[in-house]
Length: 410
Ligand SMILES: [Zn+2]
Image (cartoon, rainbow, N blue to C red; front, side, top):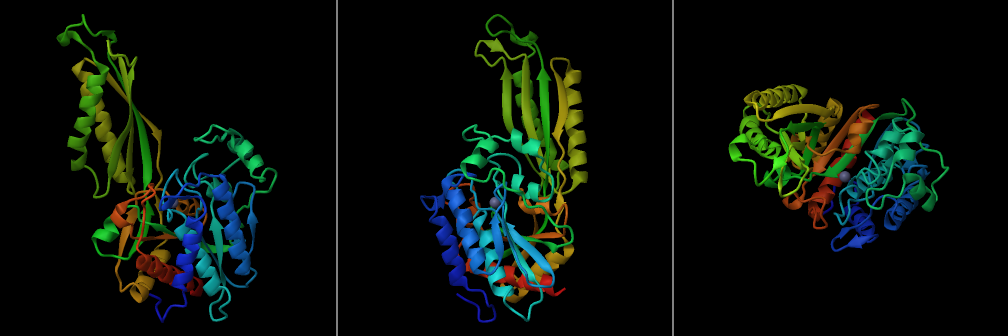
């Protein structure tokens, strides 16, 4: 499986990934919530491997692991995360960390390549306590008050309690040194089926989509479910259900090729079988990498709400509660990934946006950033059965290390 032109040790990459799968194993996947015993043991495992690779490292005050190099010349930061969703897959996170580790092992001792790869495992990318707390802490976007307020969504313990339990309380948090890195590179499983269905090996990420979220509230009239005749009802629940169907009918005409939208939560008030709902609320999300598409869809949403209100039974209010900023991946990184795919994956690559969030979108706020994807079997992720073929994992590692080499040489 190893490519004679590549100094990457494919067997070592697979062995490392399987070692991490053995910590907190669940069926063929893992269960490693943030600050759980298997998560902490995975971080300690990484610290050992990084030290063996000649990097200075430790776990910082928010659970980030950063491995830094004394080698002179440019530095490229690379990594991903080691905690998992509950009862989830073995590659979501560890793949990018192990690729970065392998890149450091191959490139840093090589006197023919100037500069070094530095390795990061960002804490809590999966959001057990917050939103990208580890990488956001590194870029200077997390205050002590944010940490005071953070709670474990699994157990409701505070983040302060968790940090104390795992022995990280009082440790300093690592902060980005401006100008130290030429950029940040992250590899990840695709978590979709674009690569597998196209027989492709590498996804060249162009952008990470922004998420726009809306609270849409329907106000009608609460009344008795037995005595109120149908023609006089002002049923907020029915208005909401019609609105959902209407969105699916009308959005496609104005959306982009990869726009997705979801009604993730519906609440009827008061929510009893014998009461006509007087109020109904839906949380609605749109994802795209083009704010112009979102503008069009938001205008449509508001005009649809106005149409329902004008009919006189229920009034509809649309409130935007989250404004997404898509993160664009650096053109130099996209070029380097394509060139490396040509050299090590037979050119079987495709440019594509990421529909899922990643730490790269946080790092992209302070330095050039790039991402590459490897195929996910059946597009499955956030489930213990998530998997990628060994050959695809090794090809991805070869491409990844070559991308690092090219970026450092520029
Ligand atoms: Zn991930």
